[in-house]
Image 1 (tube, rainbow, N blue to C red):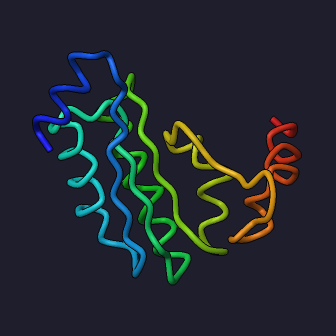
Image 2: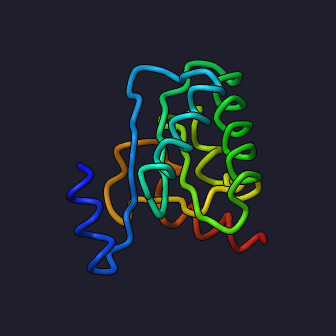
Length: 126
């Protein structure tokens, strides 16, 4: 992995390093440490996605996002929670420091809030 990162850096490629936890949501400390480790591995944009099972899991991710953003205020980070409970992180994650969201232009495999029409309508409110 180190050689790939070095090659990308030499050629001006932006590195988005990603970690997905499809089974659950790690603790706040684990999320923070994973994102920081990605920065230490020279990721330009660390990204983590988790699967929340409770609203507390969603808050854990948002708290971790805000903590890491405070450590790297000028650097983009991407965090999101998957599934219906995670919709709020995709819609309002920027309030906590998230640099990007996503939506489906066609058939949505997640919640309807992932569809572009809903995302566009939401962001018109701002």
